[in-house]
Each structure stands twice: as C-alpha cells, then as structure tokens.
Image (cartoon, rainbow, N blue to C red):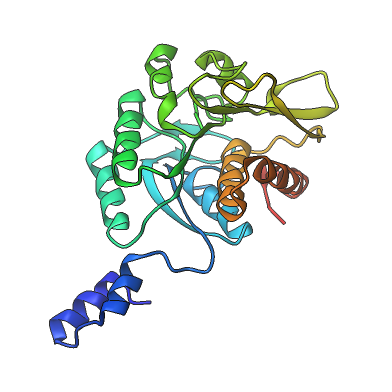
Length: 270
C-alpha cells in the first residue's frame, strides 16, 4: 500500500494512480480490523497509547494512535501530564482520517470534560457509526490526580460513548456504579477487596440486571496501566467479533496472563 508521501510523489511525477488504487489508499483494506486509541503517552509503555498498541497487536488488530498528553512518568512515579492542546489533537485526528475510516475507537486520558466533548463531537461528525469506548482516568496508579471537576460536567457526555469502562472509584465518582440509562457501563472490579475473585459488572441500558464476568483474583500482582490494557483488549476483540460479551470474556482471560507475567509493576500479554 502506498503511503501518503508515496502517493504525493507519484502524482507529482505524473505517474498517476488508477481509481482502484485511489480507493485502496483511502479505505481500510487490512485483513485485520483497524482500531484507534486517543490517550496519553507513557514513556514506561505500561499505560496510555503504547500499552494500547501492544494490546491491539496481541489481538492481531492494527492500531493507530492520537496523543493527548506527553506525560512524565514511569510505572512508579508520575510528575506531570503535559497536556496537548485541542488543536494538536484535532490535527492528529484529521491527518489519520484522510486515509482511514475508524469504526472502533478508545478514548483514555484527556485534560478535562471540554476536551473530551470536542473529541466526541469530532468523532461523531466524522464517523457517526463508530463504536467508542471511553475509559475514564481520574487518577494515575501512582496516586496523581488528573481531575477534580464536578461529576455533572462528565455525565452530560455519557451518551456519546457506546461503552464506559470505569474502575470502582471512578464509577462511584461519576455516579454510574449501578449503570447508566444513557449507555453501556462495565464497572471493573479490580479495586474491590475482601474477595478471592475479581468480578466485573456490565450494565446495559434498560436491562434488568448486570451481566457478571468473574475471574480468579491474583493477589500481590498490582500492575501499572491494567485498566488501559483491559479496555484496549475489549475494543480490539469487539472489532474482531462484534459481540460485546464475548469481547469482555476473551479480554479477561488475556488479563490473567498480563497479571501473571512481566517485571514488577509492568505486565506482559502472552
């Protein structure tokens, strides 16, 4: 497949491109699904877009990324986020969308509700039928707090997402620990205590009871970026199978491997 640079060179040289090649250059024709992550850059690669891309590769889908923050951190310490302005985020989205359509998108770390709203609206205008996961990140695993805004400023954005994937503290802060009437919510149970099992609850709008996904809790295996990796796996598996419950089940099995392998607080998908 020609890159955008190669395409420009061929036009400039007069070689031109056939209509078939034109279509190939502007459509996703990869045999594996194409997915997009919009999140922060973590130099340790334990969280953010680097972790997401590794999760996508694990699932054999092709991932691309838009950076929302150039964070200064490792798996133990977080210093500062270095937020990217909206214009930079938009420029990244625009250049990628010139040659690709994105039907599967994950949004992670963002500066504030205003930036998240701009991202959502841009995506919904450009790709109205895209399946979008929002993985709210309110605090780094090292304890750094990103957001202290009133929950109401976030709640008005729920309907833009197809699935929200908070952990227990995030779900309680956002007021969706029992689900939302606006969208599907997967409450990740990794932060619960007093049980030998990890139980995630999928709440579907207007569905009478949550769907439970249970796995063995691995004690003493806290990993940096586990929430990012889990939501990225769900997106990749949904892109492959178009079945949310199946995507969550497969992703939970992969997370067992993530917690059991790696060095210190950095997990590895095997």
